[in-house]
Image 1 (spheres, helix red, strand yellow):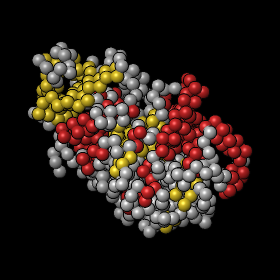
Image 2 (cartoon, helix red, strand yellow):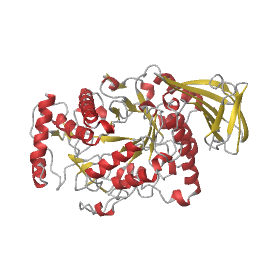
Image 3 (cartoon, rainbow, N blue to C red):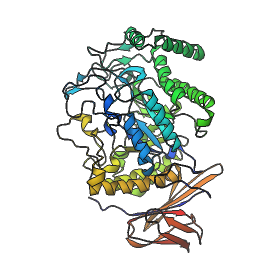
Image 4 (cartoon, rainbow, N blue to C red):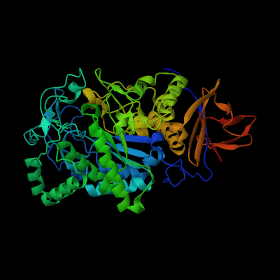
Length: 550
């Protein structure tokens, strides 16, 4: 394994910045900037079981393949970790959860063992939460408590498809979905007007023909005593927007309700390239209107002036594609169709690069071709079988590269605790979705060391938007030193980073970022230093120094 590089970070922040590095709620003047966000991505069912009473509220007890059933994780578990300050200590300012809407009740055999919809991508009813994940009252509590700590909530939107058809889960009508042909991925059309896999009904998102609420869904609402309320709400939505009662607009309405009712801050959009791009332009309009309405109706709950945020899963897109995804016969600019950012699927590969070519490439693209938009980087994820460090042998390097890279950082649950991505007997994506290894954070030295590293870098990233949203500039080659600078209106932030440093005494050139005489503190060791002749010296036993102006 490559010797892990050492680094020094230095930052100049606004006077009065009291952003907490540890577990205190956010109270500082440092603005929240989506382009610099530190996102924590949770497979809801696998994070923490906070309420065992909801585990069997739907009978899903058939034997499944390894890690292919519901394991108990829920909203209550996430709330408990919020209350403990876990996300604050990790420097998280956005939580993204896999879909929490009601899933099909039965499971299916995918060829890798019987599988239930624990992952959240097999929708039965967009207007309801799955009771195994929790209640709407708990969702409201989660959002309120997250917002109180300066943490935004991003939910996961699925409009492309419903859940599989089973004996307990009727198919949506033929005017809602198609079941053939199967996608061949040879052209723009064969990504869209088709089903991704067998028995995954594809919503006719291209249709503008008016359809009725599916009969089974109306019957379900009647049994739950909410038919009249749901129908009246739909009528009001279509009257207000003028949209036809087409399948995609029903779903957009149901998903936007989570904005107007709970004040969620963003959506990660699933399977974005499998519909025509105008679907997402319309979805963004619906979400933006809902967010404005929420803020108007809840003025005391408004966090800032940020508009609603939307990031897309255009599978295979990477930052090198810049503005376009190429289908072969057509190029699509998703940034012009509702998306503020796209997931960068190549970071887990480009993380093998040295620091300077990696950081300078990302900064150049984000501050030029993609200026005004962004990408979200990751080293591991829920459906990528080729993570940067699948054996968890380079957990410190993973954190350093991800959390210092320009763009949004996506911390996949367990990246910070060296959660295993290789589970015996698990096949396909299931091996990436093991239960969170909470016990390792108590008795596993490697996990505790990894967590401490990710916490310190994560908080520094959260406190200093220049890390993720700033302009990168190399200062020196030996020791490798660079700056990041960010400014927007009256706010400015400057960061200096140095790598490959010795232990004990470290002397780093800071260029013009810090003026001579500036007193700085190392947030990693709590030691201080003063800039003299354009350099700063910090004595520390740690291989990393994080400096900020006192």
